Length: 352
Image 1 (tube, rainbow, N blue to C red):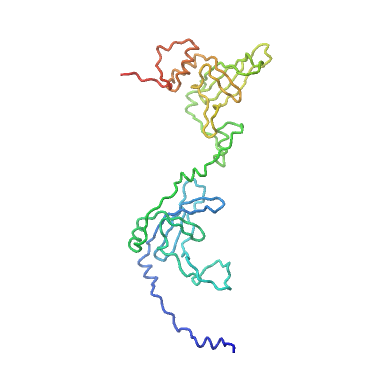
Image 2 (image 1 turned 45 degrees about the vertical axis):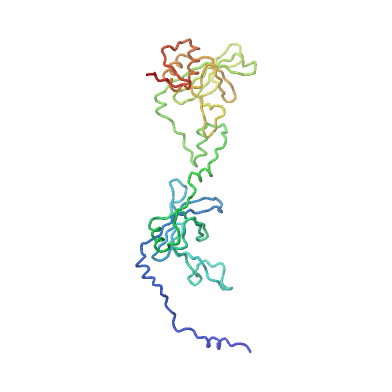
């Protein structure tokens, strides 16, 4: 015989009243209001498309057991200045077993579906928590939080844990500078890789004003296997205002080569230098007999004027001894009255 549902419900009557809970939310609010547990954590987005690790602050409000998570923004981080990552709310820890007809795509969770919320005993340093689908690694807390755990949860050890330094993260995502393509100067091309809106490289205005119209002139010859280049002579000019080099070819009669400007003013890098840290030629490298590589061509320094010697003597502390000796020997000047130099080109101090 089938069971009558009406008779079955009448045999098990519902209670006339609900037993009140012993928990008093008003007492908790009055005793714990304005008391907040603060944890320092790292948001681990390793599984995201653009993986990153961001510092956050987790605040647990003891007055109503709510949790708020704020991002710690750094200057020039490229992120919007909105600190709230998760709004202040109760975070569910464990849900009740949902019935079969309960929709799985529900977006709003009520108290009827939650069995347990996160409490202070769930926040422990050195552990990784998953809150709202995101992973947070707790590594430190403030003094009030440590005192609270010592009084209320003495079994939980609140010892700070080590976290990777920001410099290690920056080295992991170090920018790669593409090779120089030959258009413009190296400084101008590098600005396209450093920022979205390129800015012109900064110039040393004081150096330009002090060394305006000051030029060092050298005689050079082209070193080439081509017989047609034999006998070609050039003037290499080094501008002290902007460290640029220009080369002018002397006209030679009946040579078949038209003289004139061979290379306009530009900065020339040394062989083996990189785009990240380029090394440019300077007067310290211009020793008589030295070979300069200029955009695939080799030039040998053969002579210098008196103005070069005057400049090198006034800046003897920055010039190697070999370079200065070659100028003395070429110009036939004795250096008896000059200050002695050491092997590195520095002026030797007189002995006491």
